Image (tube, rainbow, N blue to C red; front, side):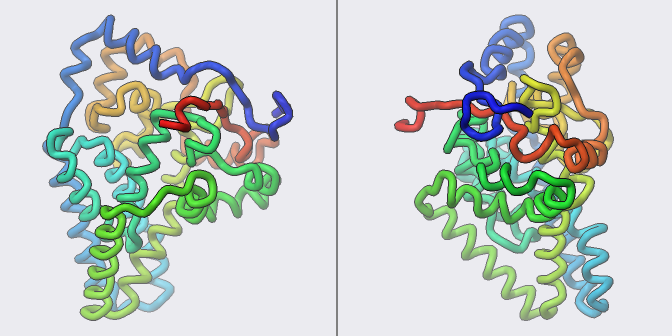
Length: 322
């Protein structure tokens, strides 16, 4: 991927993200899409069932050997935890209880966070707003890798390591790229999370804690579900910065694969994004899309043209002062 203006190997563009104009155009043609906006009444029950399943699993794994702890963390618990991070993603858009009950969404996200083992939901909300508002924004969109990541993780072996370390980059990159003060909600998130961790440890010992946290780290790293991290915004075709995936893994990831549709209409719950594609099919069918998240990971590792630098970046100079 060739250099554009001397600032590393990112693809620098000087126009607005395409989602803003496409949203206006689609709504003008299909105003009925507005009826899909608002809360998803089923989300709170689905998420609560997943949280309770993981708490039951904590009880069940307490006497297993360590090898089976890691196996079930990767094969089962981590899949649920990864799915819960995507539920938290949906909840960050207030689709659990609606915009009028914004605080309820924040508290519910803390509940959804519990099986992940480490506090995450409050900080995610704070930065995810910027990802939508300033897509690809230099120093604003912390989904974009740093120059060091792009420079170092450039061979197949290093890219595999980078994929494995994804959870750590997502956790610590914001602190380097765009640090923000810790808020009260983040303190509450941490206090509730660590209190529950201590209760689980007191009741059932260390193994359930390792099961939860190891599952989160493993399944947010080198795992088939994690293909969505790369599939969403890495530039597999020049000039295209957002891609959808319509395959079966959407069934366990709250339709995060409908990513083009999500960025066009972030206030529509994941459960209703297939309806957006169905209504406005001519806007999406002709756009580049992925057919396999496993293939995405394979191509990312072995295609020399794709790596952490394969992202579109923009300057939002005025917005930085907002």
